[in-house]
Image 1 (tube, each protein chain N blue to C red):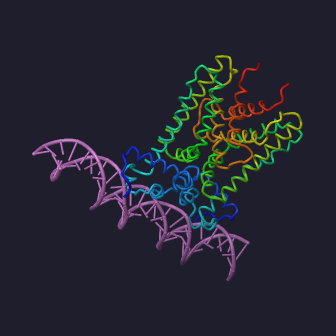
Image 2 (image 1 turned 120 degrees about the vertical axis):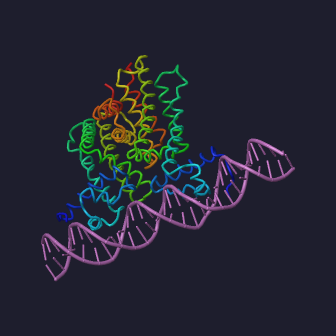
Image 3 (image 1 turned 90 degrees about the vertical axis):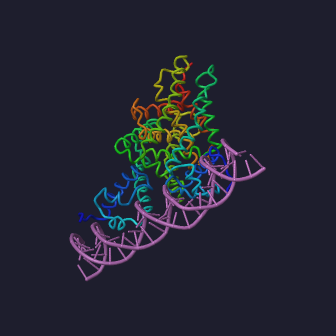
Length: 199
Length: 199
DNA sequence: TATTACATACCGACCAGTCGGTATGTATGC
DNA sequence: GCATACATACCGACTGGTCGGTATGTAATA
């Protein structure tokens, strides 16, 4: 029998295995047995910690959102210009991605699920709204301080977010012509220069 | 019994029903019976036209790629500056999207499948490569004619593509603050102005 | 009449979830 | 120290519904 562990630890271990399997096979093709096998646990144990497959997936999404919450708090450096903060967030995101691409590769899976499950759609919407809001605030701030032109902040925020989303495509189809960092840097500068006040 | 039809017509009808169902439920949750029911056909009929579920999905991807091939040929207007051609393609894509968002909403499903199926991954890679290539050629041309700065055309091409991909996010989470057209226009202008030669 | 386009009834592998049970804590009373 | 009682963590054989796929038959068409 496997070594006993407190529920809090075991749950995280299971969530990490689930992430691996869900990314590799997709939610529907992923077998509860696969997840359990990944860490040498039994099915009974899994169902001791999670009620159902869907329940496990929801817990994974919550865990996933936690990974990205540092972004929301990424503005310790309030004194700096918005441009630098945004660039910092972008670099931070790229670093997160390098460390564990799986955290990004689940996203299409979450989208797919959100498309047929209201509760999950609302969870995802909530996260995106808060990320978008963070960028909007930064841009609005930049406009007020004369750093940016008077642009539509909601739209620019979305441009930034979809640019960062481009990383997922990057991970899937791995173009070899250039690096992820180059891509993110260039994209961000393109947007930020584009909305900067001309001198 | 349903009215008989030549195979070529029926196949397309089935593919369209499959698109609807695959988008609504996702590949794995989609039932062959769902697809058949959508057009009042029988399961036997479906398996007369397609060998398997996977075969049907592959045929759908091929059909899907056909929808986007006009983009590849979108350069009838060779005389015009690259900027205008790219803007034209973007508007064309947005129009395609408006007409039938499902053609875009299957994409995550295709990504997910590509992640666990080599053949499909290669099909998708091929399409993306050709789309990227088209943009690269346009940008390179723009650079040669002194329209654009000497940028990395591969990366800019990817920026354009991921911007257009942003439409999928748009379809899923429907932000109400602004329209799809506004979003696409702004994004394209941001990129194109960003790489334009300053005057 | 041969072929194509369909319908219907059926098969069986597969897998999420169940359940009876075991093993390892840990708290309480004596 | 050591029962007793209860809780938590874990095991794995089993099942029942589901659904991709098939076998077989029939009507239309060429």
